[in-house]
Image 1 (cartoon, rainbow, N blue to C red):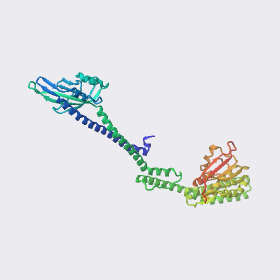
Image 2 (tube, rainbow, N blue to C red):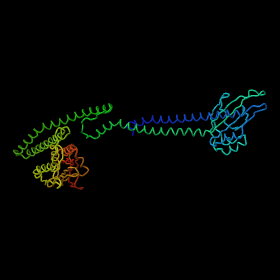
Image 3 (cartoon, rainbow, N blue to C red):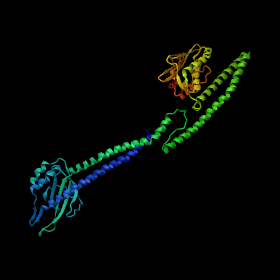
Image 4 (cartoon, rainbow, N blue to C red):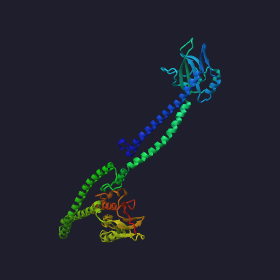
Length: 493
């Protein structure tokens, strides 16, 4: 599907959903950073207190430093294997005094303030984690060593101390704690926040989907009105309580339909008027040629008059068919009154009326009705249905051929009124059966037909919400022909 042909419903949904996804990702990132900030704040406060406590255990003496750091205190720091505390006491620029000599150094360019903790992140390898100067502490450290580098949060406290012999010396106390618990806390906060956000986003997605469907419903109504109508139905589109955009589209389409309808009506009016005007002179020409044939003695002149008479007869038939077709059009049909009539009685009366004509053509014309079909009520225009049945029977008489038989059947089945006209004449192969319902299409050039009979039948049947089809009676010539008309039966009672 090309970009220009993509669904409007899908495009609106995607464009409304994309900001939600972006906001959801931004909220998730912001939540994680916020959780990480508060987790760092908690750990930093703990490391600041520990570093100050550790600094108070190192006291200057005249001949060096006094370290008051008992084993019990070290055990407390290393008690939790998943949240170990590492420490280092040194004298810049690099004189190691106590703890783990491999803690991450201060970042390059860092400028800690005396007496204020400086916090930074670093990593400590597994081997470095067990490389402690105190042999007593190394046992505990080795037991808890990890095979992967540990991410640390480090607090560095720079202090001044001095003695009369060496005043103004500095001491650096570094305390580090594993970032594992901090990251677990941040992830847990993120998880606890993202799950409700995801549920809220799913709910918002459903609301947006419903909103898009509701907003575009007038377009669906407009589509159903356009798709559900016949090709020759040019009545205006009815749409009420619609948004201005849809109403404008409907009004534009209605304006176009009105223009097309005016042109079609003008053409049909011209055909109808022309047919009416031609009937009288054609009837006069036909009568005059009949009289001339009676008086003519010259065989050549008589043959020419016979050709004129045949042409006049065919032209008169064409005019009558054009008038029937004009009456069958929706504009003309809408001006007539619908009524409930008995299709069985109508078919029987027409068959009886056309028996003399069938006998003159050498056709055996008969009527059959199912025993259960005492009445076959349908609702419609009696004049149009009479015209349709007349054309079916007339068509069979014209093309079945002398010596053939034509049977008219009526039955009522599953709420449908069915009329069949069957003959055992030459018929048509199945591949041509649909084609003959088009206007001015003749399956044979024999006879005086004009190619409008079956087109008129289909037009009338479709006006009554019915169906008409033609199929051969047998697969090989002579095929025979069976025309079936199906109309909705009227509800009785």
